[in-house]
Image 1 (cartoon, rainbow, N blue to C red):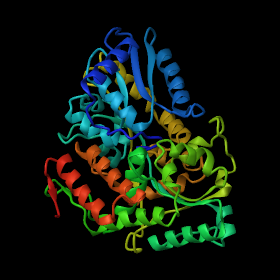
Image 2: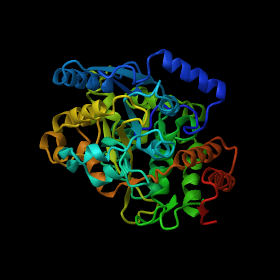
Image 3: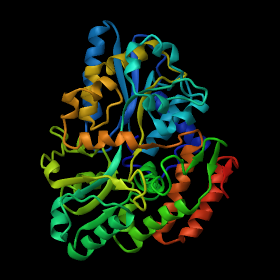
Image 4: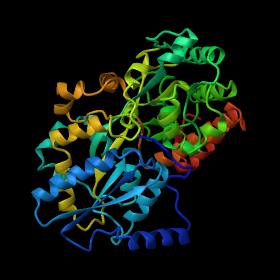
Length: 462
């Protein structure tokens, strides 16, 4: 998943009945449903809220041309949803509930896919995949991200992502910090931020996404990049797969919250009002980093998509002005580095009117050549083995090898049906220590209560 520009909306929360009816009526009126014409394929996707960023639009327009040429008489109609992530999830779920509004093909975040499977919104794809030779090229971890708890597959992944530390070499030079900076533990990250604060006024030392307005960006780029560095690589600190229970806040959870608290209490991060702006991620990529106003950014592999030629926010100098470092574990313990991975999939709604046509479109998108175009345009990490081994892919963009190499040690969220609610509870805990409304211990205790409610009491470790 690429958590960007998100609104403070609980992804799986039910809308009030009148609002739900109004939204469904609006979607029906705009022609969201797929069942009316067997020759028209309706494809819904998340359109960037930044009008200058047209990466997905451009890519899909090319696929549409290929598909219509190869399938005379068939037409592709796009049903874009222009919204921040969490709002996109809510609108998409409303569309999936009825044959009148369900598209034929939808762009599904892997963190939400199990929730939507449980709700009966998606169609299993196993019968299609069994007849598609290219499925053998997809790496197992990517396949697993689109798998339901019933063992069936409900989406075809279009790439993955990893996360690390971006830093401004010019800011580092002014602060007397090295251009080849690689912190060995959390304290070295904080020490660098404190040095920047002291020696380079007017620059935000360190960005860690936080709070409900940032949504999954806060959970993944922020909290989990900390939490998954507190223990050992063999243990999942959020979910116990042996007991199938979620894990209550322990020492690692509190240590991760304490890091967030330190960033904002010592004013090493953005102003709290900025950090809690739902569009702060857009500002980081579009203003703060290109303008040299941010020292260190804990963020994802996809940032360069905003800076490529034709993006509307070209920044060809970025590879010379920014450095990359992996996020260290808390005390430098093995494996020494932390990354989280997510990604998106193309899924076919259970109520889609043209499922066969939809999978034909997936096959067109996911040829080796088209997949490679998408990975490069989107600054994504390849999930096809044949693309990952292609020198043209590996050398296509600065930083791509750094982030691809992190796949070997990356971690994945326990994206079970309750996860979206668990994620929101994490964001609430982060926000309370960011604003100073609660201590670390109080925030952890509140999280435990939210965790019980979100998982129907399926909690261990208290």
